[in-house]
Structures are given as C-alpha cells and as structure tokens.
Length: 289
Image (cartoon, rainbow, N blue to C red; front, side, top):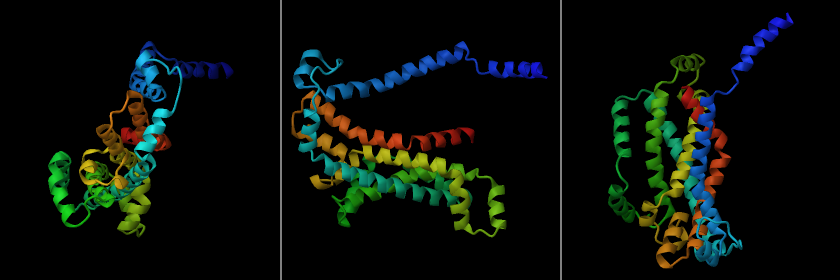
C-alpha cells in the first residue's frame, strides 16, 4: 500500500518541477521589473545628491554625500503639506463618489435592464473617447457662471463624472453577465432591488470595485491639465501643479527637481502598496471570469 502511495506521489511532485520555459519567463519578467523600476531608483539617488555630486559624477551614480536639502527646499518653497492635503482630499472624494456612481449606473444598465441600455453605454463609451482639451472651455464657462471656478469642488465634480463614466462602461459589461440564477434566488427570498445590490451584487463584485477605486485615486492624483485651468490660488492647488509651478517660476537644479518628483509620486506608491492585495484579487477575479 505504501509503495502505491509513493508511486502516486511521484507524478504529483514532478508537476511542480520548473521547465526551461518557466525559467526563461521568470528571467524575462525579472529583467522587465528591473527596467521598469530603474527610473525610480535613479530618481531616488539624484534626490539625495548635492548639486556638486550631480555635476561631478552624473545621474547614474550613488550620492557621495547624501543630503535632504533638495527635498527640504521643495517642501518649503512649494508649501507641499497644503498641496498634499488638497490632492489627497480631491482624489479620495473622486474615488469614492466615482465608484458609487459607477456601481449605481452599472446596476441599472447591466442588471436593471433599463430601456435603451446599449445605446446609453455606447454614448458613455464615446464620451470617454473625448479629449480633455475639448472639455476645457465649456467647463470653464459653466463653472465660472455658477461661481465654482477656482474651487476644489469644481475639480471633484468634473473628475467624479469623468471617472464614473469609465467605471460605468466597465462595470455595466460585468453586471450584464451576472448570473441570473443568483438574482432570481434573491428575488424569491423577498429581497428588493436595494437589498439585491447591497447583499448580493456588491459582495461578489467587490474585487472589481476595489480595482476601480485604486485606479480612480491614482488617475485623479496625477491629473494636471484641468486642475491647471481651474485652480488659480496657491491654497487650492494640487501636488502636480506645485511641481509645474515651481519649474515655471524658478530655475531648479536637477537634484531639487528629482526631489520634487520623488515627493510627488511617493503618496501614490504608498496607496498602491496598501491596496495591492485588493488590486490583485480584482485582476485574478477578472481573469477567472
């Protein structure tokens, strides 16, 4: 009996042996990761260099005399804490409201079967293809007339609509293939539409919703064009605007520019790391689906 078990275990163990193709893929992925991370590594090295070190050895060497003078200079000159709070507030509000609108719209279009839902989704898709440059003047005129120009609320409204349009297009396709047996079972149990959404649809689609939340936050954080046109006062500007404004007003050395860029991307990296598990779950769920 023991010999039989050993004979059965051998093929199972053999399945876990990596082939040459597996090792080749692993090597290629490792090389790709190094290539993708190399700009961040170079940026970090230059952020802690003195201008003398940079001029003497160039951008591809380790700092001989590490210093935080570039980071401190950008921090104080650009009022970075204020810009950070502004970006964080706008990005979080847009991500939360964008996800909520996407879920409600997609539930109505994909599961509620609203009349003409295909045409509505098509119009949303066409709206997503419209460049932001085409939206600037109409949005500027509208928010100027209603008194919301140069306010964070205007940016929140604009990007909530933009992000939720993409989220609606994506989630409506997912909800359109939602198992009807589950929906019918919840109806037989006496659940109304709100209860079906909150207790059945949301728990199943939570990984996909988490991916949208991460993407909405990062996309909004990195936005530059529309905030540049709408946020004039220094007290309401965001982190990307602080970097661009500092470049336009002052001649910055390479080390200060590297330090400013590093401070600008660190929050999104931290946010991505915090929600990495949810992001992976959403990607895996989409692949399995």
